[in-house]
Image (cartoon, rainbow, N blue to C red):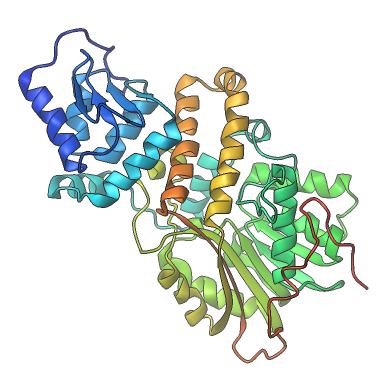
Length: 417
């Protein structure tokens, strides 16, 4: 989006005020107000959670036919301001949008604005570069020390982010029932925290695949520094190139980028990768029902991302002739994780602005706050699904070993003999 003209001072015209009132009415009169550049207000005036302040008429007209994309772009460009707590205002906006239906022009515009991603290796590589290869320094300013960029697990509500991320790593490992000496393949390993944790704390050997050059280089340096090079191999390659048979298959935070059309092939890949007694786990952002990715997030933040519903995920397991063993939803854990990230992001906002620019800061502030609101409103979910071969009868009959009493994030179990 090209930079918009500076804010104007002229009075709003009657038709613009009518448009503002109609826009609020189309949202079923939510508990926030809409203020135009001259101070005219439409919508809630008392007990309002906040105000959207439009600084130029262009934004108002675009909001009428490109609700989400127009709002997000205008906020990023500084042509729309939010007065009040950004998360609370966006949460109310999500609820309002859920109660309303976009007109045919809005649906057509939204579909036209969204890019179709083939999720080929080249397309996936480009999408990963756009998001994950921004710079390690950027993510180090607001993630935890291990750079775990996925939902934490608050086994106790007072855990610090670092503790909750270790608790998540252990939660995944316990669900996979890892034993010393076993082999694990990881699809999409981020900066390597889970692979290194599995090797260090559970005594397994890991092959981890990732197409982000920056992340793989960082993970290899960590493995070398920790003396784990003989137990963890980081490969800069696509999950479709996995070869061999393993005791466990794990993917945390990658499925969103695979593409719904590739689920059947992923399922067959998991089937080929698992030994007869093997166990699998997929951890992913999801939805209650199939829906396209937000057009702005697809364009500026996560190109090609497609958070699936559970019904869409089942194609993975059906095509791979795999049995689903367990499904857990950690939606509120992700809302809390994102709040921690947002707090740290704001603490580093000035440094990030110097590294990039003010528009970049506004984009990522909006992304983090909108994500918090999406998980709180139930627009987004966080699924962990475990699986195995259909004929595998070695799986435990209960979950008792997963939820061990007395464990606290930050204290990993020692390698078991």
